[in-house]
Image (cartoon, rainbow, N blue to C red; front, side, top):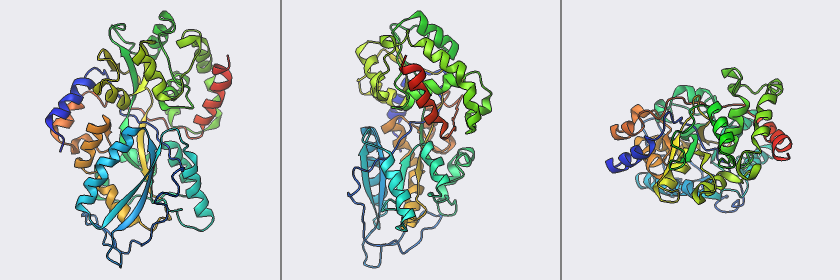
Amino acid sequence: MLRKKSALTLLTVTTVTAALLAGCGSTNNGDNAANNGAAINGAANGATNAGGNAAPADAAGKPVEFNFYFTGSENVKSLWDAIIPMFEKDHADIKVNEVYIPSGTGAQPTYDRILAAKQAGKGSGGIDLYEDGLSNVTQGQKDDLWDTLDPAKIANLASVDPNTLKDVSNLALPYRSSAVVLAYNSDKVKSPPKTLDELFAWIKANPERFAYNDPSTGGAGSSFVTTTLYDKLPEDAIHSTDASIEKQWDAGFKTLKDLGKYVYGKGIYPKKNQGTLDLLISGEVDMIPAWSDMALEQIGNGQLPETTKISQITPGFNGGPTYLMVPKLSDKKDAVNEFLNFVLSPEAQAVVVTKMHGFPGIQLSNMPQDIQDSFKGVAEGFRTFNIGDLGNEINKRWQSDVAAQ
């Protein structure tokens, strides 16, 4: 249960947002730890039920073990280091083997390993649970890698917004969210922009005081670029993977190119989400797009100056959940489903709020009242962009049309 103090701390920080959307930090998995816990002996012979009973131990009486691959910043590891012992304390017959790949060490190999194992007839390649962003959810749907989540086996799925599950065809669990917002120095920015057009005007009126990261290296910069490209397009365009829409990006890319001489260093684009946060920390810029969870965490621990505030434009920057996927060919699905059921419990979701300053993966009505109160006014304007492989095309064209200028 979340302590009242924690909720109030979150409330104190989040009330600076006008309409913080509940988006997400996209996470990807690498495989430089492929041999750490990748081959686990013992099969899960028992089944779980919707009431939350743990899967029985294997025939030798040992706990059923499964491998959970995830990546991200250190705060992601801290989250699972907190949640997994909570789960194992009450489920002594299940052991979760964490395989953590630090952020920036490579994402694609883990996905490739799951796919290669399927193609070679070798199950799931020793990977039983996988955390990643929307792009790999949709790619895995094409490659038929993910198991469909069953409410009869994961009772707490009933607490998740059904539209969020429908958006990924019930193939992935949206266990937490965060939003891309504007993070700014309130000593220098007294009235932050409220729309994208106002933001463009502010950037031009304050040369080199705004920065966004290379969109191929982090979701905050990607969100700024994508939101700019889709600014004047029909609302349903953000849910289309139709390549014909690319010709409608021209105006947005022209805007981004024209902004180049006004952004930090007259066209310097830092690497990764932390790159722009570091510029805000050092005072080299006064405003950046940033993930809400990263900004809130670094405000809370003193990395960002106490003058840092966050706000949202209308319509909001894009974001979305971070997902957990179960490889269809895993032989540990009973134990994994039991773990997923726990991850969606209010107890575990409270850890998402306190440790990551994230938005819960379950609907707020299922959370304790103090957490519900702390998020009042936070969830409005939620926008999830689901454009599939078009994101890769955006990054390629940004490199040639914007970065290369």
